[in-house]
Image (cartoon, rainbow, N blue to C red):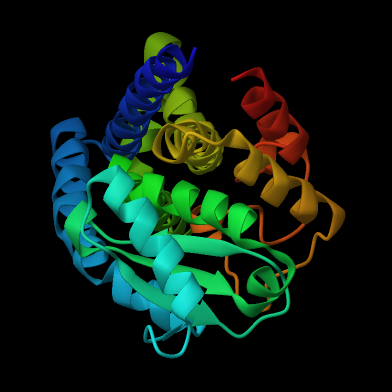
Length: 295
């Protein structure tokens, strides 16, 4: 069952990522259609993505560490935490990641890193206070699973793709507001029929693409949490630790003070508390526990 769950999650992740790429292309097509040059719209969208994505990609880890206020701790400062992280990293056949602590009473954790051998894991002081060694091992295994699976890289890329789509749509909306391309749109609208319908479709794509991108990002994030839970069990051979950790966090939900929308996907559980299903960055804790118990 474990390996089938991992295979299903890989397929779903690939499908969701294809949706992201399609949304970038659709936004470029919509801009080109509205302003009279589809090729220029597509080329502009792809060029913008080609510049924006690498900038986000190579600076994201440092940005996340700075945004969250995480501080690196030595083995002398937190010996048990370092030992747990090292044991799980050995089981995962990865180099030991850097270990950080966030001074926040909300129990949570996250991982960052664009390569499995250059990662970091961070734990809030609130989580360290309420977890015993077995539960802490489960949390560490989940975060190291994200590094092992490349999830931190993938989710940062997803956030960047959402940013591309939102920025392109915003540029299109501002140009429409100031009347750019108005003569071309009037000329094509006057023809009626397919031309007018095409313009209407382009407008709908331009305004709905950012929402669709955010929903796809949330679905991708929820999907990766199930995958990381399954991989964590594979590393520790002990689902009880992760179940214990999730049960304790279900009983003590709290908002992480310095969590932002950009970093929410990276946390062990939702750092904002409960939100409506479509807009969750994480699956319900009850569902995660149910799947772990089934394993």
